[in-house]
Length: 181
Image (cartoon, rainbow, N blue to C red):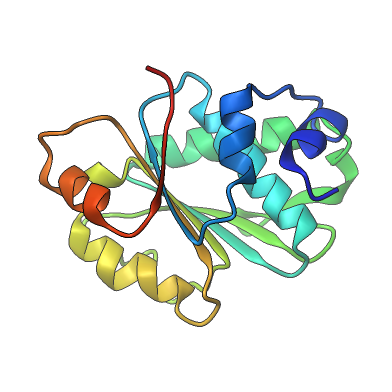
């Protein structure tokens, strides 16, 4: 089941808006998602679970600026998995979610220097609130995760046109999706 909208409806029992379905179907290697969304955590959980279940033996890393946000995201991923057909296919082990097909979802806190991120290899990295994470951490810890896999990287950022990193990311060679109005 490679279509994320079909996966969300049939496996996770979640209906997606057209905007979210379009975002989840985007196959770009580098993606910039702008704007807040009330269900951003749900969108991230669906992306991580879908990617993990459709790509066996892969590593998905979600990078959060704070421990609170990391716990919130992990709870949301577990909640969605436990209330779906994946219930028996997902188990928690060593602070990560292990999927039955060998894939692993890990949620990490970036920290000021990115020490917790170093040494991880990922096929999909989702950076939440990238404007709150040091550009040096993104450059020296997040991008090296993708070096050996040529993986996919999503940057989730709020709409802040006056922020320097926002302007830099807007100029980067990435596919851009703006959520909400």
